[in-house]
Image (cartoon, rainbow, N blue to C red; front, top):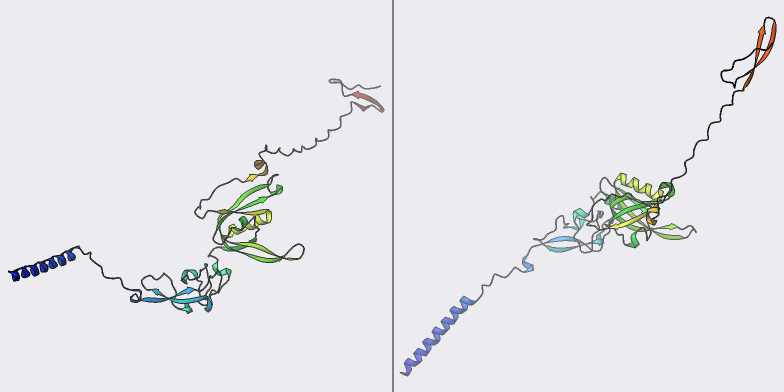
Length: 291
Protein backbone atom coordinates (compact mmCIF):
# COMPACT_ATOMS: atom_id res chain seq x y z
CA UNK A 1 0.00 0.00 0.00
CA UNK A 2 2.76 2.32 0.93
CA UNK A 3 4.58 1.43 -2.29
CA UNK A 4 1.52 2.39 -4.36
CA UNK A 5 1.36 5.79 -2.64
CA UNK A 6 4.99 6.50 -3.46
CA UNK A 7 4.44 5.44 -7.06
CA UNK A 8 1.44 7.75 -7.44
CA UNK A 9 3.42 10.63 -5.92
CA UNK A 10 6.29 10.17 -8.35
CA UNK A 11 3.88 9.94 -11.27
CA UNK A 12 2.10 13.12 -10.21
CA UNK A 13 5.37 15.04 -9.94
CA UNK A 14 6.42 13.84 -13.39
CA UNK A 15 3.12 14.86 -14.95
CA UNK A 16 3.25 18.24 -13.20
CA UNK A 17 6.75 18.87 -14.45
CA UNK A 18 5.75 17.92 -17.99
CA UNK A 19 2.75 20.25 -17.86
CA UNK A 20 4.90 23.11 -16.57
CA UNK A 21 7.46 22.57 -19.36
CA UNK A 22 4.76 22.54 -22.05
CA UNK A 23 3.15 25.69 -20.61
CA UNK A 24 6.52 27.47 -20.58
CA UNK A 25 7.11 26.61 -24.23
CA UNK A 26 3.70 27.98 -25.21
CA UNK A 27 3.83 31.19 -23.15
CA UNK A 28 7.48 32.13 -23.72
CA UNK A 29 7.80 34.93 -26.44
CA UNK A 30 9.76 34.17 -29.54
CA UNK A 31 13.28 35.56 -29.32
CA UNK A 32 14.75 36.72 -32.64
CA UNK A 33 18.29 36.08 -33.57
CA UNK A 34 20.62 38.69 -32.05
CA UNK A 35 21.76 41.48 -34.41
CA UNK A 36 25.30 41.21 -35.66
CA UNK A 37 27.78 43.17 -33.59
CA UNK A 38 29.72 46.17 -34.98
CA UNK A 39 32.72 43.92 -35.47
CA UNK A 40 30.69 41.69 -37.76
CA UNK A 41 29.70 44.64 -40.10
CA UNK A 42 32.21 45.32 -42.88
CA UNK A 43 33.79 48.80 -42.81
CA UNK A 44 35.45 51.05 -45.36
CA UNK A 45 37.98 53.83 -44.76
CA UNK A 46 36.41 57.30 -45.15
CA UNK A 47 38.32 60.60 -45.11
CA UNK A 48 36.96 63.23 -42.68
CA UNK A 49 37.88 66.87 -42.09
CA UNK A 50 40.14 67.24 -39.06
CA UNK A 51 39.03 70.86 -38.61
CA UNK A 52 36.62 73.40 -40.09
CA UNK A 53 37.68 74.11 -43.70
CA UNK A 54 36.30 77.43 -45.07
CA UNK A 55 35.57 78.03 -48.73
CA UNK A 56 38.75 78.52 -50.76
CA UNK A 57 40.98 76.46 -48.46
CA UNK A 58 43.49 74.17 -50.15
CA UNK A 59 43.34 70.87 -48.28
CA UNK A 60 46.59 69.81 -46.64
CA UNK A 61 47.68 66.54 -45.07
CA UNK A 62 46.99 67.91 -41.59
CA UNK A 63 43.43 68.94 -42.51
CA UNK A 64 42.10 65.39 -42.85
CA UNK A 65 41.97 62.07 -41.03
CA UNK A 66 40.75 58.58 -41.97
CA UNK A 67 38.26 56.53 -39.93
CA UNK A 68 36.48 53.20 -40.53
CA UNK A 69 32.90 53.70 -41.74
CA UNK A 70 30.08 51.12 -41.91
CA UNK A 71 30.03 49.72 -45.42
CA UNK A 72 26.22 49.70 -45.54
CA UNK A 73 25.94 53.47 -44.83
CA UNK A 74 28.56 55.12 -47.03
CA UNK A 75 27.90 58.78 -48.06
CA UNK A 76 27.74 59.48 -51.78
CA UNK A 77 30.95 60.87 -53.22
CA UNK A 78 33.14 60.02 -50.22
CA UNK A 79 36.93 59.89 -50.32
CA UNK A 80 38.63 56.72 -49.12
CA UNK A 81 42.27 57.85 -49.31
CA UNK A 82 44.06 61.03 -48.31
CA UNK A 83 45.38 61.44 -51.86
CA UNK A 84 41.84 62.06 -53.11
CA UNK A 85 41.50 65.24 -51.01
CA UNK A 86 44.99 66.68 -50.43
CA UNK A 87 45.78 69.60 -52.74
CA UNK A 88 42.16 70.27 -53.76
CA UNK A 89 40.29 73.49 -53.02
CA UNK A 90 37.17 73.64 -50.84
CA UNK A 91 34.07 74.85 -52.72
CA UNK A 92 31.67 74.80 -49.76
CA UNK A 93 32.59 75.01 -46.08
CA UNK A 94 33.36 71.59 -44.57
CA UNK A 95 32.88 71.21 -40.83
CA UNK A 96 35.10 69.20 -38.50
CA UNK A 97 34.43 65.42 -38.69
CA UNK A 98 32.36 65.87 -41.86
CA UNK A 99 33.20 63.47 -44.73
CA UNK A 100 35.22 64.98 -47.57
CA UNK A 101 32.68 64.71 -50.38
CA UNK A 102 33.52 65.26 -54.06
CA UNK A 103 30.66 67.79 -54.39
CA UNK A 104 32.42 70.11 -51.93
CA UNK A 105 35.87 69.90 -53.50
CA UNK A 106 37.18 71.57 -56.65
CA UNK A 107 38.86 69.68 -59.45
CA UNK A 108 42.46 68.74 -58.63
CA UNK A 109 43.83 71.18 -61.23
CA UNK A 110 41.62 74.11 -60.16
CA UNK A 111 43.72 75.13 -57.15
CA UNK A 112 42.28 77.16 -54.27
CA UNK A 113 41.08 80.62 -53.41
CA UNK A 114 37.79 82.42 -53.91
CA UNK A 115 37.72 81.99 -57.70
CA UNK A 116 37.06 78.24 -57.54
CA UNK A 117 33.84 78.81 -55.57
CA UNK A 118 32.27 81.10 -58.19
CA UNK A 119 29.43 79.25 -60.00
CA UNK A 120 29.58 79.15 -63.78
CA UNK A 121 27.99 82.23 -65.32
CA UNK A 122 28.34 84.27 -62.11
CA UNK A 123 30.72 87.03 -61.03
CA UNK A 124 32.14 87.64 -57.55
CA UNK A 125 31.72 91.24 -56.39
CA UNK A 126 33.00 92.57 -53.06
CA UNK A 127 32.11 95.94 -51.57
CA UNK A 128 32.59 97.67 -48.27
CA UNK A 129 29.92 97.42 -45.59
CA UNK A 130 29.47 98.56 -42.00
CA UNK A 131 27.34 97.43 -39.04
CA UNK A 132 24.33 99.28 -40.42
CA UNK A 133 24.73 98.09 -43.99
CA UNK A 134 25.48 94.56 -42.80
CA UNK A 135 22.28 94.33 -40.67
CA UNK A 136 24.09 94.79 -37.37
CA UNK A 137 26.69 92.12 -38.11
CA UNK A 138 24.15 89.35 -38.59
CA UNK A 139 24.84 88.82 -42.31
CA UNK A 140 26.87 85.65 -42.76
CA UNK A 141 27.95 83.52 -45.77
CA UNK A 142 24.99 81.63 -47.17
CA UNK A 143 22.43 84.22 -46.09
CA UNK A 144 20.09 85.76 -48.67
CA UNK A 145 19.60 89.54 -48.77
CA UNK A 146 17.90 92.31 -50.71
CA UNK A 147 19.99 95.33 -51.74
CA UNK A 148 18.53 98.84 -51.44
CA UNK A 149 20.07 102.09 -52.60
CA UNK A 150 19.28 105.64 -51.43
CA UNK A 151 20.16 108.46 -53.81
CA UNK A 152 20.02 112.19 -53.20
CA UNK A 153 17.95 114.91 -54.81
CA UNK A 154 19.93 114.86 -58.04
CA UNK A 155 19.00 111.21 -58.63
CA UNK A 156 15.47 111.32 -57.25
CA UNK A 157 13.74 113.96 -59.30
CA UNK A 158 14.05 116.64 -56.62
CA UNK A 159 13.55 114.31 -53.62
CA UNK A 160 15.88 111.77 -51.93
CA UNK A 161 14.69 108.32 -53.03
CA UNK A 162 15.21 104.73 -51.83
CA UNK A 163 14.71 101.82 -54.21
CA UNK A 164 15.32 98.07 -54.10
CA UNK A 165 17.78 97.21 -56.88
CA UNK A 166 18.54 93.51 -56.19
CA UNK A 167 16.49 90.78 -54.54
CA UNK A 168 17.28 87.41 -52.97
CA UNK A 169 21.02 87.44 -53.65
CA UNK A 170 23.31 85.09 -51.73
CA UNK A 171 26.15 86.33 -49.56
CA UNK A 172 29.15 84.26 -50.67
CA UNK A 173 31.62 85.48 -48.06
CA UNK A 174 32.17 88.09 -45.38
CA UNK A 175 35.47 89.35 -44.09
CA UNK A 176 37.54 92.43 -43.45
CA UNK A 177 40.49 94.27 -44.87
CA UNK A 178 42.89 96.80 -43.39
CA UNK A 179 42.73 100.22 -45.04
CA UNK A 180 44.04 103.67 -44.21
CA UNK A 181 41.65 106.01 -42.43
CA UNK A 182 41.27 109.67 -43.53
CA UNK A 183 43.85 110.47 -40.84
CA UNK A 184 46.26 107.92 -42.30
CA UNK A 185 45.85 105.37 -39.50
CA UNK A 186 45.17 101.70 -40.34
CA UNK A 187 41.60 100.57 -39.69
CA UNK A 188 39.70 97.32 -40.19
CA UNK A 189 36.96 97.59 -42.82
CA UNK A 190 34.31 94.84 -43.09
CA UNK A 191 33.21 93.73 -46.53
CA UNK A 192 30.76 91.34 -48.18
CA UNK A 193 31.12 89.28 -51.35
CA UNK A 194 28.24 88.28 -53.63
CA UNK A 195 27.94 85.87 -56.54
CA UNK A 196 25.95 87.79 -59.15
CA UNK A 197 24.91 87.53 -62.76
CA UNK A 198 26.74 90.08 -64.95
CA UNK A 199 23.72 92.41 -65.21
CA UNK A 200 23.23 92.24 -61.42
CA UNK A 201 26.89 93.16 -60.92
CA UNK A 202 26.40 96.23 -63.12
CA UNK A 203 23.36 97.34 -61.11
CA UNK A 204 25.16 96.93 -57.79
CA UNK A 205 28.24 98.86 -58.91
CA UNK A 206 26.10 101.72 -60.23
CA UNK A 207 24.03 101.75 -57.03
CA UNK A 208 27.14 101.83 -54.82
CA UNK A 209 28.60 104.75 -56.80
CA UNK A 210 25.35 106.72 -56.96
CA UNK A 211 24.18 106.55 -53.36
CA UNK A 212 24.17 104.66 -50.08
CA UNK A 213 23.82 100.86 -50.03
CA UNK A 214 21.76 99.00 -47.41
CA UNK A 215 21.30 95.22 -47.03
CA UNK A 216 17.97 93.73 -45.89
CA UNK A 217 18.31 90.21 -44.43
CA UNK A 218 15.82 87.76 -45.95
CA UNK A 219 14.14 84.60 -44.65
CA UNK A 220 15.76 81.70 -46.56
CA UNK A 221 12.32 80.19 -47.18
CA UNK A 222 11.03 83.44 -48.73
CA UNK A 223 12.07 83.27 -52.38
CA UNK A 224 9.29 85.40 -53.92
CA UNK A 225 10.22 88.45 -55.98
CA UNK A 226 8.29 91.58 -55.07
CA UNK A 227 7.60 94.67 -57.16
CA UNK A 228 8.03 98.08 -55.54
CA UNK A 229 7.97 101.66 -56.79
CA UNK A 230 10.50 102.96 -54.29
CA UNK A 231 9.79 105.74 -51.80
CA UNK A 232 10.63 109.46 -51.68
CA UNK A 233 11.34 111.57 -48.64
CA UNK A 234 8.07 113.52 -48.77
CA UNK A 235 6.14 110.20 -48.77
CA UNK A 236 7.98 109.05 -45.64
CA UNK A 237 7.30 112.31 -43.83
CA UNK A 238 3.65 112.26 -44.88
CA UNK A 239 3.69 115.71 -46.46
CA UNK A 240 1.99 116.89 -49.62
CA UNK A 241 3.60 116.30 -52.94
CA UNK A 242 6.26 118.90 -53.70
CA UNK A 243 5.21 121.85 -55.80
CA UNK A 244 6.38 121.59 -59.38
CA UNK A 245 9.31 123.84 -60.26
CA UNK A 246 8.34 127.21 -61.77
CA UNK A 247 8.01 127.25 -65.51
CA UNK A 248 10.30 129.70 -67.19
CA UNK A 249 8.48 131.51 -69.96
CA UNK A 250 10.32 132.95 -72.93
CA UNK A 251 10.52 136.75 -73.06
CA UNK A 252 8.09 138.28 -75.61
CA UNK A 253 9.59 139.24 -78.92
CA UNK A 254 10.15 143.02 -79.28
CA UNK A 255 7.34 144.76 -81.19
CA UNK A 256 8.06 146.00 -84.69
CA UNK A 257 8.53 149.81 -84.86
CA UNK A 258 5.31 151.62 -85.78
CA UNK A 259 5.11 153.00 -89.29
CA UNK A 260 5.26 156.84 -89.45
CA UNK A 261 1.83 158.50 -89.68
CA UNK A 262 3.03 161.19 -92.21
CA UNK A 263 5.22 160.77 -95.22
CA UNK A 264 6.63 163.25 -97.68
CA UNK A 265 5.89 162.66 -101.35
CA UNK A 266 7.79 164.37 -104.17
CA UNK A 267 5.62 165.45 -107.13
CA UNK A 268 7.02 166.42 -110.53
CA UNK A 269 5.07 168.64 -112.98
CA UNK A 270 7.24 168.95 -116.04
CA UNK A 271 10.50 170.47 -114.98
CA UNK A 272 9.01 171.68 -111.70
CA UNK A 273 9.33 169.63 -108.46
CA UNK A 274 7.17 170.06 -105.41
CA UNK A 275 6.82 168.22 -102.09
CA UNK A 276 3.50 167.13 -100.59
CA UNK A 277 2.88 165.63 -97.06
CA UNK A 278 0.43 162.68 -96.86
CA UNK A 279 -1.33 161.69 -93.57
CA UNK A 280 -1.30 157.81 -93.54
CA UNK A 281 -3.29 157.56 -90.25
CA UNK A 282 -6.48 158.68 -91.98
CA UNK A 283 -8.30 155.63 -93.24
CA UNK A 284 -9.55 156.09 -96.74
CA UNK A 285 -7.72 159.39 -97.12
CA UNK A 286 -5.71 160.10 -100.21
CA UNK A 287 -2.59 162.02 -100.75
CA UNK A 288 -2.86 165.53 -102.05
CA UNK A 289 -0.47 167.31 -104.21
CA UNK A 290 0.98 170.65 -103.29
CA UNK A 291 1.46 173.36 -105.72
